[in-house]
Image 1: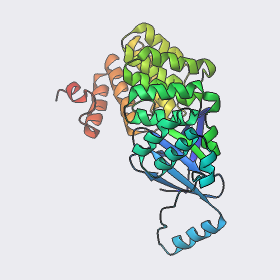
Image 2: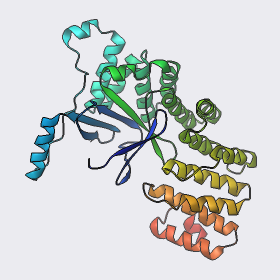
Image 3: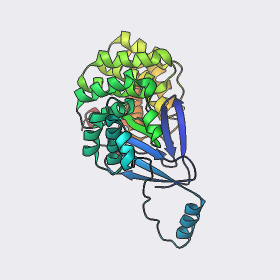
Length: 346
């Protein structure tokens, strides 16, 4: 992993997108946790493949000089050993409540890459807001949806205590959550993070009304939260893609959205879909064209989705040749994408 450039953009309280020179930072696994260890010095990051867990170790000036000498000798440095405050001594364990011991043991197991043990331990720590939060996302990752719902509801009900124990043990947690198939956001342990996770659980359970109600609860507090607005737009569109009344809601949700990030671009995609449903093809084309002006930091799937939708709009506008050119380019890149082959008569 490179360390020459790293930027974190906060797009709402508790919601961040991570960028590097290669675009949005990847997540290993569908959903996982980003745990940053330490607060000062040089940062070294290692990920556990398949878990979504990253370590960031902070070393002092001495460590920095050692790494500089290794680079000069062209010898790759060994992976850093994660440092944390998760080692309870004998006497500390005696005076630590059972739920908190389970929380520490669960985090230690996750840091060691043993997600099965981590999940087992954290089930005994759900009396703590942070234990319920992490256990809920682990249950979500394991597709144990009823359990994930229970834990995340518990975390949301205790949102005032979220991040208290993570901070106590030197952990800065960010969870990767797929907001749409094209966009992944990183959420922190807070009320918003718990409710976003809960909305994902409800969506997978087919409880669309509950998912929408949860997102609306967040939106009442922060109406300009682009991640929540995108999540709502996706849910509403998937529930009834041809419903003109709901399409108007999506257009209102999106407002005058600008192409400031991948999340904003994805929201523009759903705004364009809604405008197309309302028969406003020219307006839909203009939104899509604006969304496609920026390609840096945009996922290939998101760009394909935008281009596919614009090609469909070209057809609606009677620009058949232009639409076919776009469909042919998409087919050359990804022959199995959507119904492109059928539209091309292949």
